[in-house]
Each structure stands twice: as C-alpha cells, then as structure tokens.
Length: 162
Length: 456
Image (cartoon, rainbow over all chains, first blue to last red; front, side, top):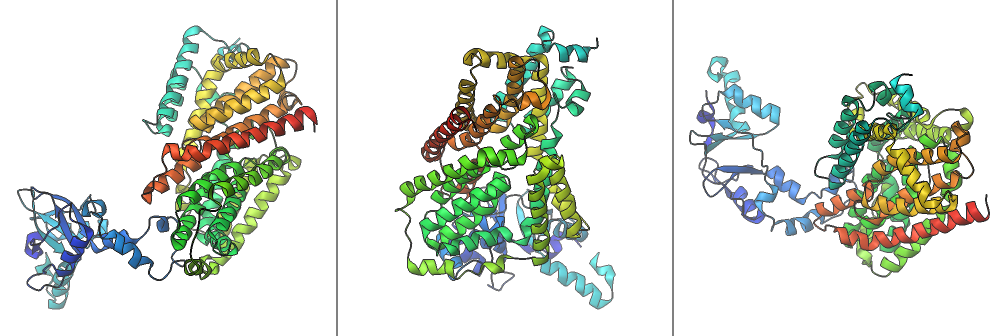
C-alpha cells in the first residue's frame, strides 16, 4: 500500500498572503471527502502551485499564545478574555507569518511504513503527498493510517496492511 | 634558557610573533564587535590560531594561569548555571515576580519600582542574563494584564540588572573575572561596591520616577486581574524548592566565608552544583547540563587564550606603558581614566573581552610601578585597590550606555522585537546613556571620596 492509496486528494489550499481569518474560515469549512466538516490543516501553495508551508490548528493556537509564556510557567496567571482579545488582533496576521515552513512530506509512491516513520519521528498528524511534478496531490491523515492498521488487526489478516 | 622561560622573563619576543599575535587579537575583536560571525566561533578559532602558530604552547593555553584559560571563572559560571537550571522549574522566580506585583497592589509605577529592586537584588546574586530571562516574561504578562506599555518595564529591568549586578563578585561577569585575576574575595566586593550600588539604586529609582512616574496608568478592573493572581500556584515542586533554597543558602554562606575558608568561589559554587544535582535525585542530568550556556563558556575560554597570546608577546605590556605614560603614575588619575574609559568602552563593545584585556594590563602596570613586589602584595597594593574597583564600576555600569553594552540589554531588545515593539538602538540609548553618565559620575565621586579623601 502506498501513500497515494490512502491520501485524500487535494481540493482546498491556502496562499501565503491570506489572512489568518481567511484561513480559519477555510479550515472550518474545508471538505474532507464529500462532507464539509472542516480539516485540521491545509498546505500553503504559492502562485505556481508549489508548497511553501503548512498551516494547522496548532499554528492557530500558537497565534494566540504570547511568546513570553513559552519562557516561563505562567499558565496559572492569566485572565478571562485574554485569548479572545489576542485572537481578535491575530485575525489580521498573514498565513506566511504563522505557517510551518519546513514541511515534512512524502512522495506519492512512498510505502505506508515510510509514512508511519515520518509521522512518528517528526510528530506530525498530516503528511502532504507530492506528485511527480513536485506539486501537492493530496494529504495523508493519521486517522486514515490508523483505520488501515486497525482494519488489518480486526480482519486478523495483517498481510493487507503491507 | 628554554623558549618559555625566556618569554616569561622578557615578554617581547621576535617581531613576527608580536605582530602575528597582535593581528589575531585585533582582527578577532573587530569581527566580534561587528557581530558578522558568532562571537564564540571567532573566539575559539582565534584561540586555536594562537596555539597553532606557536604564539602560545598548548600547555600555556590550557594550564598556565598567566596566559591561559582561567578555570576559576569557567567553573564558577558553569556551576551557577547548573544551580539555576535546577531551580528554575520549581517556579520560585515566577512566585517572586507575581508576589511583587501584588505587593505593589497592581499599581503600574509601584510595580516598576518593586520589579527594579527585585531585579537588582537577583542580579547581585545570580548573573544578569538569567535574572532578566526570569523576570521579563512575567513583566510583560503583568503589563498586558494592566494594558500598559511593557517597553518602559523592559528598559527599566535591564538597567536595574546592570546596576544590581555591580554589587557583588558573582553579579556580573566583569566582577567574576576581576576577582579571579586580582584574588579578591566575595566580601571585599560587597564591602567596596555594595555601598555605592545601594546609593545608585536609590538615584535610579528617582530617575525612573521622573521619566515614567506619571505616565503609567491603568484602570481598577485591570488591577483586579493582577490582584486575582495566586502566586502560590507558581510553585510546581515544593520539595525541590526547599532543596534548592537550602543549597543556595549554603552557597551564599560559602561565598561570604570563602576567604576565611581559603576556598575559591568556584569551589564553593561547584560544591553547590554537585550537592543540588545529588539532592535532586535526577537519574538523567543530561538536560540540566545541556542547558548550561555553552556558547558563553566557550567564548570565555577562547578570549582567555587570545588575551594570553598578546600578553605573552608583550602587547599588553606596551599598552600598560602607554597608560602609565598618560597618567604619569598618578594613581587617582589612573583610577579615573580607567573608570570612564571602561564605561564608554563597555557601552560600545561587550564588556567581557574588554575586561579580559584590562585585567592583565592593570597587573602589568602594577609590575612597572612596584617591580619588587609579587603575589597578593602586588595585586592588593593599597594604591592599586581603587583601580580594581574603578575597573569593576566602569565596566559594569558602562553596560547601560547602549543596547549592545550588556547581555541583559541585548535580551530585552530581542524580547521587545518578539512583541512587535522593538526598542531601537537610539531609544535604548535615550534612557541608558543618561543613566550610565549619572551612575558613573556618582561612582567617580564615591571612589574619590572613599579612597583618596577619606582613605577608608
């Protein structure tokens, strides 16, 4: 089984100059298969369709998390409305400022074990899948890998998961 | 006579060696000041060149106190860093900062005053960079809670840390280096520098009162945010906190008595670091040791060797002769020239390489003046003592003069960038330079009055 067999083909993507509010809207409504239930991350493509980054829900959380709170243990000393206040201002930031720039991706013919390897070693839950022309063709989600693995367990026929 | 013995008896070696060493020194310092390449990389490479080109023997660079790495400084720094790294996760520093903001009843200017005092006291006991890294995040949080501009707090924190750090042997790297070379004790630093630092802090608080006293305003409901914070929640590990405070107590007591005990400060600190590591019960000290600021430590090691090289070939001696020529052997004039020159030099360049160069220069100057003396008789000559204190005061207080004058300043400027309110070079100088000029002027009066008029 290869990455391309499990990935969800690319439909929506972000652009570097989109604002965080644009991105939030798309993340909330993007399609996953045919349902409009939102996704947890989208690739960021430049005008030529090449991937320049990836924006996930985690990056949006980071947008409201002041950097000084990473330097000390201050989680106990916040106040009601702090997140909302920062979020209102953060909506105007650009996707390019908050996206993850060094994206871990796989080629479309990468074997499933290689995908698991990347997910575990880089602690990512989504892998952009790159086609032969170097462009993103889809996203491989941890959940779909999980479904395949557990299917093999439940079928008691592990051969299928190779 | 061997080459080494000849070099020690007569520091001026062949011309090529002299010019090679001088060139390495000048070029390395120029690159460090330009900040084009990381200073640690420059220092290590230049130090290695001194040995590769046979200006120094490896033995001299590694094992001879006069020309090589000053392990007293290195182990004192590493040990104190280990102690802080073990203490930090307990939450004690967050506790102190939040408690201070509450004692100030959430009033913005009162908070600034209390934070300045806390920063100064902590800077005297820990190094300035650590203090600023611990206090500034809480400062920005409190300013955000009160919806006031955090920038005045950041600037005030850096300035207070440089003033407070001047007070003790361990407060600021220049003092650590001076203490080691001049064989001065912790209590001598407290006795000679702490009194003037207390005066400087009072004056500093008056200065910030004039600058920011009436400008920082907040509303009652925002003050309530600060008053609602429970500082006790900061303490994450009460058991480790007790152990840390115990060890810190042992270390500080050890510093107070190290002269009487005939133990170097580095020994005391190493004992504390070892003890706290043991008490922490950690099975994997890897992260505690990895968080030691190795780039700073290696920067020091490199500098010691570079300066050792130019000391050996006689450049430092030549510089000390120029100094004597300038002051005609008048020790009061020497103290004043060193204090003011150090202040401006430290404002422009990192005070660590500056003091690394000045220490052997002062010792060389003393050798010219009193050729028959040696050891502590020479280093602690009554006429030389005010020169050491002037060097310490000038180098430490000069750090306030510009945004790059001290590591604490570099850190707050970096943090201001992260909150999109960058403190520009000029903005820092607008506050820092007057504070530097006023504090050094007071220090000048202090040295003159205490050592040349009252002679106590």
